[in-house]
Length: 415
Ligand SMILES: Nc1ncnc2c1ncn2[C@@H]1O[C@H](COP(=O)(O)OP(=O)(O)OP(=O)(O)O)[C@@H](O)[C@H]1O
Image 1 (tube, rainbow, N blue to C red):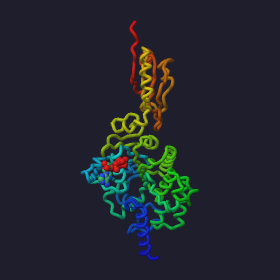
Image 2: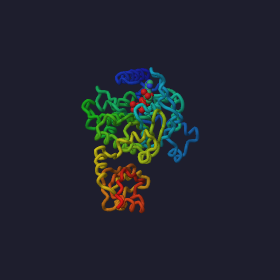
Image 3: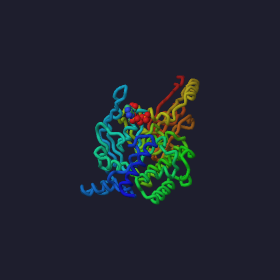
Image 4: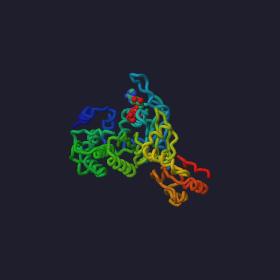
């Protein structure tokens, strides 16, 4: 087949893929052939391009490259024109993501998460500001360079976006086939990826016969076919049950560390952030309201939006128990109900029972719990105890807690 014919055949295959998929061509543009690039064999063309640029510029030292952020967002703004008027989806958003980190973006519905995520692979163009990847400004890349860039950025979706008429093997291999990779290379790369995601035995199965978790594993394998160095996850576990969510999150963590992938994920579920992310950024109405290491943000949330998103994870007092405690307090003068809060900053090893013992033998643990986030113990414990022992314990410190809230106290009668 002549070169022109090969290129025309690939164009046709590409058009068939985008039509069959029924979502924007741009989303699958990583599969499209470039007008100038040779068929992809295996090489990371984006990395090569970067290496060439580095060579011309004198190149960063390895230490500099490791310390330099992988992704840089500078003053991103985006406004949509809706029927009801303009919608400001992003406002002056600036942050960085380090190479190899798992970075979470959380916010309520409509906060701007998808818009922000899609600026990374130029599925959305900001009105102002810039996104840089390895020092290259995404907004300045031409179409061919964008195709190269998108091959370095894998993406997985909430609803998996698999082709129902293709087997697992063909779904995973499709981007390579469209990019013109030789069949035997496709086969060996797909086999390796199916091994990685634990689906080798499902290679010839159609998506309809897979569970949600298995479909997302196929989505992950497909996102990794071009050996990307960035993986974008768009609510990747929102359609999954808790058990599948756990297994997909641990697969992502595994893949990220094995392949040195930078992962950027968006979610509205703080449990996902707690489970997998190194750092988190909280978006509210298009603006950053908080960001930092996950254990710090979760242990001491500053913004109301963060607190609202955290509420489902709090070991809060169930309403029926609260009512019972009030009744209980009425008849027990001298009793106090305390909530001991642990933010985790000083406590990588957990909470010592010796410290809790300072509260005395009559202290009763009523409710609560601790989580461990990146080695930091966080949570709260609700206790009842005679106020006198609380005062004694206070004199010796806070029984290990970062702060203690007195929820109720019935003064003892004056004799
Ligand atoms: N194509 C569009 N046209 C008009 N408005 C849009 C468009 N895309 C997004 N928006 C609006 O921009 C705002 C941010 O949307 P975006 O999808 O980025 O938020 P999100 O945090 O991802 O929300 P969700 O969690 O519900 O997916 C919302 O108010 C949304 O309605």
